[in-house]
Length: 527
Ligand code: ME8
Image 1: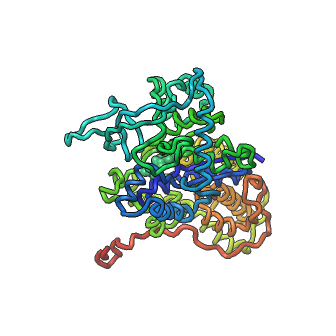
Image 2 (image 1 turned 180 degrees about the vertical axis):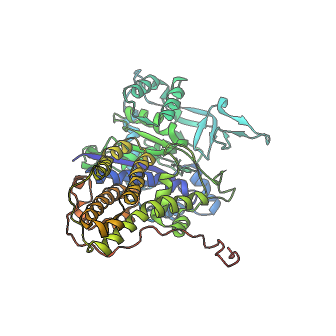
Image 3 (image 1 turned 120 degrees about the vertical axis):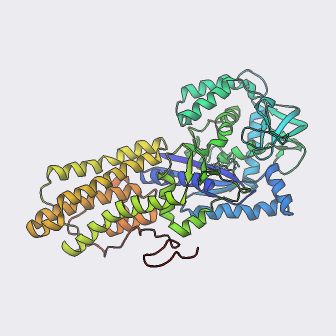
């Protein structure tokens, strides 16, 4: 069986989860569900990043011991996944023993091997330089700017502090040529293309050795053989992706099946860690780098950066309560071309719900299914000969699987939706042109053919939208009497069977009416 391994970042447990975290996990879920639909054995991993200074500081601020703190906050991230309808196979915490063992093993493996230039991968030195706790990242003086408050800041806006401490280094400076050759040989290794270019020009500028241990605090995994040092949190965090498939047991079924990972899905803020450091660490440890890192864009809220200090963090659970799970999933995957930055606004959310879902898809389903229930004996109609218009319609829907498959391979989630909804729009035009309500009186046999064609379109559309809107599409497939074992790609051409009895139709997507909006004849309601 073909296999597919997709990972979300593991999120820092310093804060509550917000829409940005929900977004990345959702993108992984849509991909995982599509690949399962397409016959792959899938492993979908998410989890929490619990060590390092940032989390230690958050625990101290809360006045709680870091382990107790992470136990509590990690739970919020774990709970977000089922709330978003995510089908993850595992949830990893970096404070678990399986992970500590794995991180110490990768350290030993790196230490035991040489760089492409024949030097030791790891050596002991001293770090003197800038560090941003918010990013858990080291910065070069040349990357910093000084604000009007006199504080130095990283390009991300995070404040930096001066650090001087004994540290182990990873000899990243020896890996630049190897990395450049690797990007050249593997054009899909980093996506989208803008990120790939950004990563390659960063590497071309020359790489500095990377500090991979800290000694001024102890909330981390100890360096094997030198317990005064805890490992740099990014070496610890990135290793989660192999821990979860059984590392250091490289002979395990999970490891052999799923490593190298198919896609590490990340936000654009953490590309450098995933597309520069991580492949070098893996290769240094004698392991294959992941096949692809895909970095999506950044959400703002009504035009503003999302931040706790601005008080505009969007709680995904509240969104789901207000608009419905499948509606939120659809909106997030459709509103913004995946890979680009996007803006959340309530108006855009409601527009997508009412236009694409209620008017276009919901209405098509409702029109066809209630018409069949009333006028075609509540069972799948028996088609006669297909006209050119019928065939054109059926062919467009049949072609969708290949289109969606190709889009999914490039993480073009919005493109796949565009293609499917173009067929929905075409089907709405087809209903109007064929006018089955007129045929009912003039040509019932032709009416049956038209309704059959429309139900076939709905079947194919519903099959492909399952990864995005699993609950509603399961209901639509139920209403089309598609058996549960005929809902994956292998059943793509298994057309509806004429005469199959259909359950009573139900609405799919209610129109959203803002409860605070004025109702005709009434004054505005209080929020
Ligand atoms: O970076 N828009 O964790 P983190 C879109 N622990 N995506 C957003 C977003 C926004 N406004 N805000 C956050 C870390 N994200 C590390 C990762 S992986 C080995 C270690 C998403 O909690 C996006 O995926 O800061 C981003 O990369 C991630 O959350 C950062 O999560």
